[in-house]
Length: 115
Image (cartoon, rainbow, N blue to C red):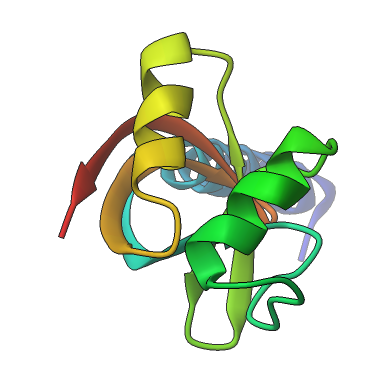
């Protein structure tokens, strides 16, 4: 391979890498829908006090965040919207559908609805 060919190959690899990175970023930032039970980040699936709803509300009142329990996976629900927080409180311990953007184990919630 001559010097000119290597240069073009290097440019091609950089362009392909840049496009792949942008595509991964676009997928990570896309709204997704998740279905599970409203719980809290501290207790997850193993509630310690009363019913799942009572325990979730108590833990959130003491600083825990709402969470979505999907099988064995626990997603932290991130929102500061008062209507969404009120809906999560009402739906504590129940199955819901959450729409939002996933970032690691946290869902930036855009909507929540009873299942």
